[in-house]
Length: 89
Ligand SMILES: [Zn+2]
Image (cartoon, rainbow, N blue to C red; front, side):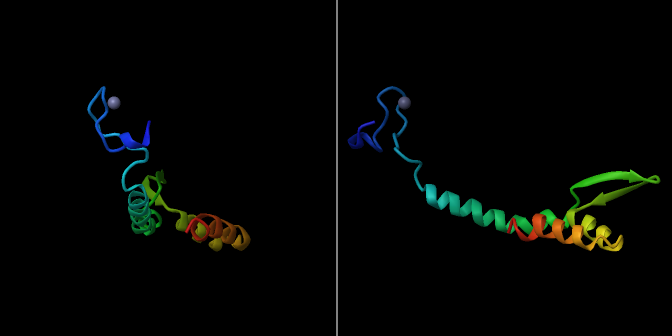
C-alpha cells in the first residue's frame, strides 16, 4: 500500500486504509490494565468443581497450595505458589 493512500478509502470496498491499527498502543495498554484488574479475581474464584463425598467442592490454586502446606509438602507448596501466583504477575 502506498503511504500516500493511508487513511483514504479503499478503491474496492470503501474501508479506510491503515498501515497499522489506529491507537494500537492505547488498545494494548487498555487490555493490559484490564488484565491487572481481573487478575486477583482469577485466584479468588475456584477454577474447578467436583463432588467429594456427596458435596460440591470448589478448588482454586490457593486451595491447592494450602492443602500442600497442610500435608507438610512445603517445598511443593512454595513451587506452586511461586510458579502460579508470584511469577505471572
Ligand atoms: Zn478494501
